[in-house]
Length: 305
Ligand SMILES: [Zn+2]
Image (cartoon, rainbow, N blue to C red; front, side, top):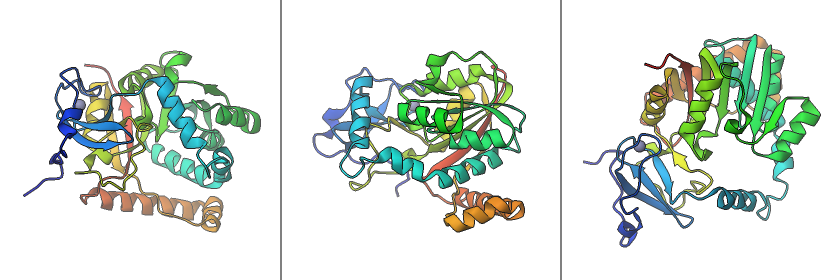
């Protein structure tokens, strides 16, 4: 009998693609790993401690920047920025969904930070809901657009580079960013520092590392995704860094056509019913062995023991 965590059998030659004794898991500190898969000339290693899957060798920043540029400038994707902006309504709807999930844990007024904010659609929705908002993003076109069109306070660069004052935010959100982070622990620690005591962190992150194996046809976006997580790994990492996880569920984005979204925007009752439906669906998914999806996590800054 196999379990979902059984290591895939390395193909001939893959054993040689393991690090020679100098590997340490950046998430849990374990020195033990196993081969998981190959993609885009990189090896994906699974930590034997926390089960996180990490790209090895980890590319440097220049290599990563070139990989992002290749992805964005690929044939047919030349209008990446315009395509992204054209999905504004859908990003705003998702932003409202996230704010709705955050509401039972943390409500405005207060200061909210979005790490990896893109053009700032979630932040604009948060501001409308009463939050005082700030955002950081690595993409200069997004930061420039959000400043110009939405008059948002968006900062270009990594969170750690901006030195926000300690304990200056009531809430922070990070949507689909965790897998891309060069140094996830460093970023989580910075979020802990800038959140006030009992401040709330909302993560939307992939849990692909719960998959038993990677199909050859799957695109895990290596090396743009540097780490893949499991739900226990995310929980463990947050708890070790001083957060108390208050909620963890599979993301439940039930597709609503554009017309329906406009209707939801106008009818608070329908929007609340939609959120309830998503919540029930998420709870339902969480009871199954579903993996390879996305999770929503709400964690509160606790006192370090
Ligand atoms: Zn680990």
